[in-house]
Amino acid sequence: MTEESVFEFPCDFPIKVVGRAESGFESLVAELVAAHAAKPDADRINGRLSRDGNFISVTVTIVAESRAQLDAIYEALSGHERVMMVL
Image (tube, rainbow, N blue to C red; front, side, top):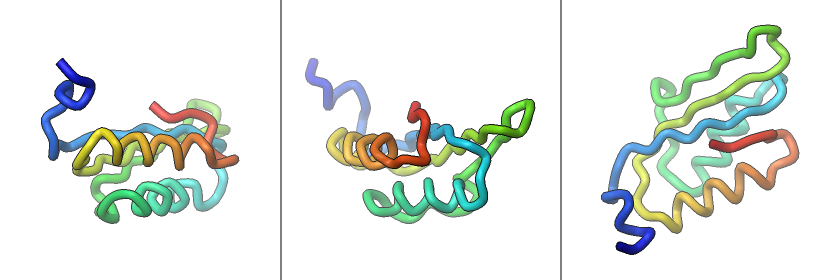
C-alpha cells in the first residue's frame, strides 16, 4: 500500500489551522489554501475562538485532488508566521 492509496482522491478533506485571534486570520487561511485548491466557499470555512479568546482555530474543508496538493497546502500554512499549528 502506498501513501497515495490511504485516501481515495478526490475527497473532502478538512484542514484545521490555529493562530492568534487577530483580525483577518480566517481570510489569511482561506487565501493560503486557495493558492493550491479551489477557493473554498464561506460555508466550508469555520472559525472557533478559544475559551479565553486569545486563539482561533479555523477549519477549511477542501476537495483534495492529490497527496502532493495536500503537502503543498500544509507547507504553505505551516510556513506562515501567523500560523501556530496545522492539523
